[in-house]
Image (cartoon, rainbow, N blue to C red; front, side, top):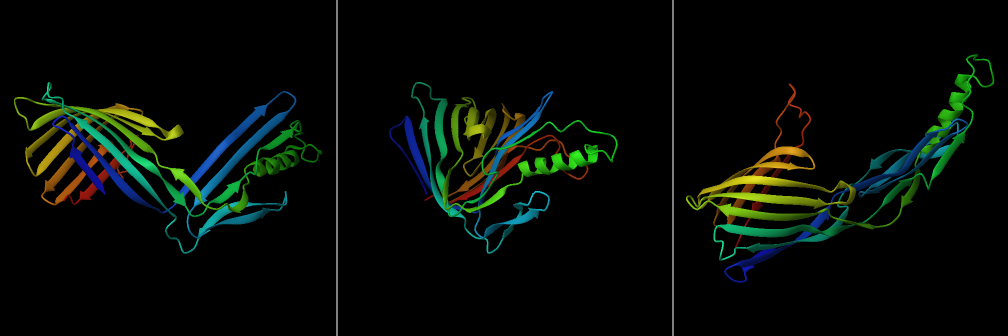
Length: 287
């Protein structure tokens, strides 16, 4: 549910409140994975965990006969359903300075919110695991006590145990923040044909290690009141791209669709090559 209104002839503010329904969330972290091949010793460490929130999820486990360690080998889902609920807000402001009648400036913060998940199935190495060995002097003779085959079997078992996760069970609910997006834009209306405008937009996704940003230069046209379209060029974290947007809006109805990143190169099987793409569409009922 959204609302916006003019404060005066120059300023307009708006906000949207969104209720969210979560299907599933999986967060896999490899905090530490290090291999040191020293002159006298090999040292390997690992620390990993998986937090999975999905109704009806359970982990499958198998027993490693050589190490007698039971580890997570897969997952099953029964009676899957809603995984959690949350809320988010969008905030925005538009500024049209009277002294610069052809310019419009905008600022928006989107998806500021969270989802509360009902469960958290944890699989973990249960802390830091370390494997040390100096048994790497192999003998080519298969009958020798330190033959390659015998020593490799021992090392292989210990290596595999480093990445065998324990089923830690349901840890209860957990809350995850959404990846917020900050948009800063400026638009110039062409004075000789005011149905044509040009814009510059910076979009920054705030998502920890997965944050990204890009800049877009666009050309926008609204030939009639019920329709407008846009094409844009982008450059940023994911390289250079091309986007487009079409928007149909009549009283009581608004439909838009477009792509921020358009696939430019396809294989013979129509598989995208060395590119990223995103398709967006939406339906609004303004009143």
